[in-house]
Image (cartoon, rainbow, N blue to C red; front, side, top):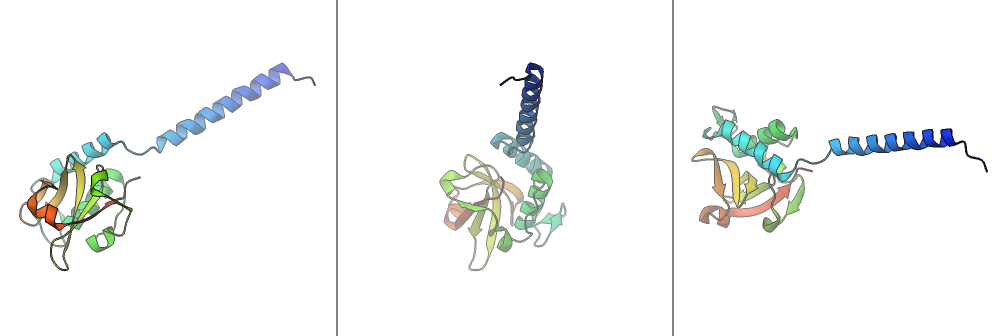
Length: 157
């Protein structure tokens, strides 16, 4: 069987180009690394730090916990989450507290029918809109939060 040398090299060249482009395009959709996620969350914190808590609020005059999560994921990650804690807890996959990564949602049962949500940063810290101090960073090992911890969900790819 005779193979045309020029035609074979041409086909091999194009196969290489197509393979390279497919690989490169796939890389464009890679997930944001943990350091990138953490940086985005700290940028959001810097912009919203101290914003007072206001039930139903969704701006710098006042914001509630689920509203803060909603805006953070929309602004920083282009991800549209539900507006309420009740619906946010149904998103993503459940993760155990020892497996938390930056960007994971952390849910608390603060009263019989009251839920609270924050966003995990790293090293046991999370970002949230506190009813008493507004947008702040708190620690999971804080006595109050440790007692109220309910579950965590991963919503970022």
